[in-house]
Length: 385
Ligand code: KIV
Ligand code: ZN
Image (cartoon, rainbow, N blue to C red; front, side):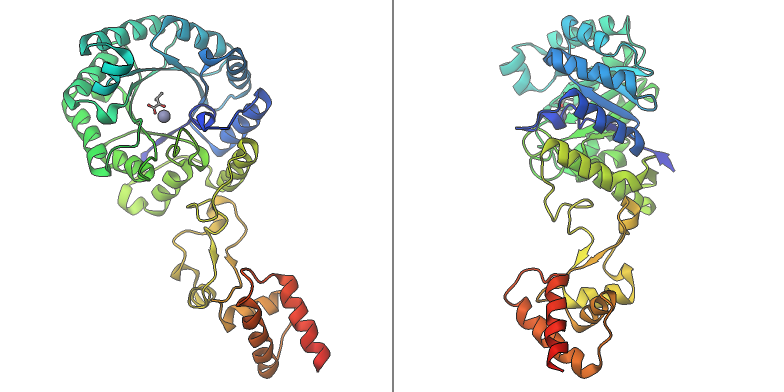
């Protein structure tokens, strides 16, 4: 089975979520948990952005031993020097250089022609090569870049010693079929492509970041970049837990797996949510509070008979204890009786019918019926008899 490397950028692109600011202690706490989760590569920050971020990246670089630690850098000498300083003491350092390649970015942001972009990136790679044996190069806004230019940029990065070339869909513009095809074309057409790893980095502006990342894997990508809970600029980045569980659940289809310790996913998600203040929506895939919760009577009945009727993966896989059967107005007698058993009550048929009728009347008025609600129905019931 092919291994897919996981590059986590929760501490860099994730921290770029509006309103999020992580101090050194918080970055370290998350980095330790990412290491436990088995993340291959951790992008700890953008050292040239501030002295505080440089210090935080350095603290992570000195503390984390099992994952590669990465610092982001524009294609400029000062930024590369900031990453050199920040990664001092790292067991396995890597610099992540980037330069925009799309016509829109070349014209309005960089004010550069194609050849200037190519040569600026080449100079940066040559300078970085003096200090780093591991270099990732990103063609920012690759998703809107001419495919032949992307091939030329990739070939140049390989020539200049990059070990990973990243193809970001920076603005979440592409459709999975198109994104997957870019990888396929690069694999087929760029000389020396077998010497490096190709990486996918997606944003979720149209809600396709996970689908695009999976399409990239089918097209030949070796590495997926993303964040925990999918946090990041605008609508966020690829949610790494979604990619990991898609590969795990559909290994028959993808023939590829990560080496993540999946049982750490739930804990990592909660930690990132608490420290960033970014609340995870209840219906979020994999880590939302409702991801393993069932309310309707038909589903609950199925679950009580055989869990695979309504669950394609088990909550234990991501480190949760069990699925939840939530009692509400859609719930049926089977789940109600099961709840009573959990609470230590066994009622006869007639008593059960009466209690169930009271429960249904209450459920019509209330969103969630709690254990306390059920206990008070039972107490009322038992007082009457
Ligand atoms: O989305 C993007 O293009 C980025 C680059 C810096 C890799 O985050
Ligand atoms: Zn990004």
